Amino acid sequence: MTIFHSQLAHSQDINVMFKEADNLEIKLKEPEALDKYKQILVVEPNNIKALVKATELSCAIGGRQTAKKDKHLYNQSALAFAQRALAADEKNADANYAMALASGKLSESETENKKIVAYIKDDKAYAEKALAINPNHGRANFILGKWYIDMVNLNSIRKNAVKLFYGGLPEETAESAIKYMEKCRTLEPYFMLNYLELAKVYKQDNKPPKAIEVLQKLVKLPIRTADDTAIKAEGQKMLDEMN
Image (tube, rainbow, N blue to C red; front, side):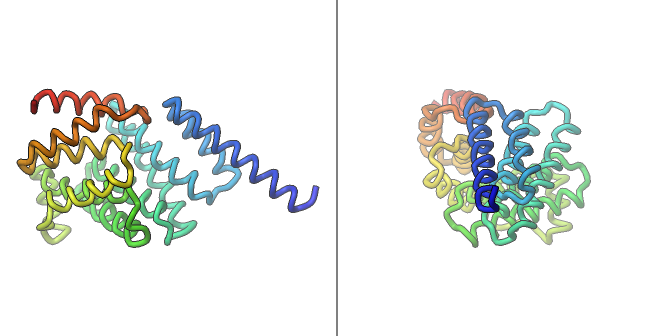
């Protein structure tokens, strides 16, 4: 077999594996999809698409673990995938988004204050890098929007840690969160988590009509991920309480 034909066969094999992984995600079989992306990475260790998908799925599966230790292990695994993506191409918007995603999740599961603040910093910094490369990256817009509202809602211990290590808290909060999440809504109209978090921001910012409008759209969205059923149920409960 010539080198050209060998490369062609290799490319076709990878494409088949991506299709299989995608089909598993459609069937909401996320652990199996993650395993498939890991198989792709055995063949192509620097495949950014597979590394980013592995980051996303590790975060999603980790988020559903009941034990904090298990959550943290999945989040650490997610960061390792994201770091590999960034090492493969630091100017890739998806790779920077993956770093922001994993850092944000680790800031939630970490217990050491200094590390929490470092992850909070990285969460914002990498989301901003992703948007500097591609301003229309929907998920990076969501992450940055959520970062701003999270700064408002930090518990007192974490807030003090951020003030100490970060030199204070950002002045722009709900307004910035709304700006970035609304842009995400335009770019990713089926990304259900963005709707839920945006509705929460509107409610917290004393804009109930806007929150209701967002929730009414959320509850009509199709189920696309393993988390969407729970997100939709939370959105419906919130809508029922506000009506």
